[in-house]
Image (cartoon, rainbow, N blue to C red; front, side, top):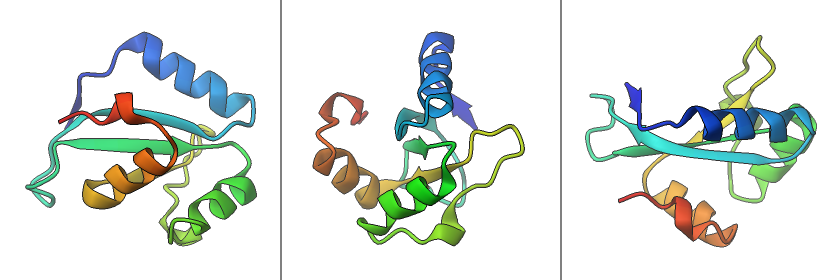
Length: 97
């Protein structure tokens, strides 16, 4: 279950994806399959080759992209991998604890 997303943040994320950028959106999230994770970061881009290449540098596999018909395909980052990638990208303000 997703929560804590502001409409403005979601719209900005979609605009960045539409512009061909690698876009990040972090929000609170609960899922019984991942009891130790309280947040998820969605990293999207409309250019799937660019997104896959970006993910490859962090050990993410192309087949892990959540392919969306609405055009907002993305990787879901969770746990330690989420923290490592956000830190490497210099996105410290998005590390919700």
